[in-house]
Length: 281
Image 1 (tube, rainbow, N blue to C red):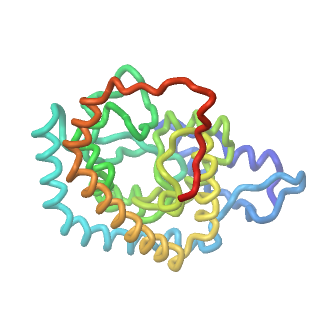
Image 2: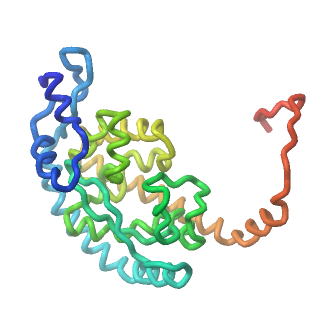
């Protein structure tokens, strides 16, 4: 079983690009099973129960991603043209993310926000009513069509079809200070979809990250063909619902915008005598 010093090495800070090779070497050291506590009672770093599957599934990922990309290429092209026609800036853009063992790579996405929107703010999470999101971008984000170009990253062997969602290096470093075990989720390739993603909404704060990390660490240990198939099937049902929901919102969006413009001066008065609580019907 690993000592406390070894555990600290396994969860060391995420490197810059010139340190990625060193991180890869450290992260591949044998680690103990997270289900057994260490000698000091603390949890220890996870390792996949089926390491052969983690390495072998890259071949299957590549073949499936190639077939999906051929089918999705016309849709991706149409989305790129639509985004360029409706807002200034490129339709397709690249964003730095942390991959397996913390190695940085450029992830491809359809642009859904205003161009260069983080010039003054830096890397920040996007909230539910983020004003930086364009009208077309809101629909693409709601049904997650903006993620389709990441098939390119799967073909480049930087991502998997299923795995923990990748985070930006600058945010990884901030998260690691509060959640030291966060780097353990990078022992497998990040995925287009993941166990945590179909269970919880997008990250808004560190408590959301903590909850998702539970699922990511479980996935790293229990990753298998059966689990991946279940996640893929769950993703299909999850995003089918998201697509119909997004279409439903799109059908009445112009009326919703008009309602907010017409009644933007609507105020909520302070009155402690009126209790606000949910009641049954």
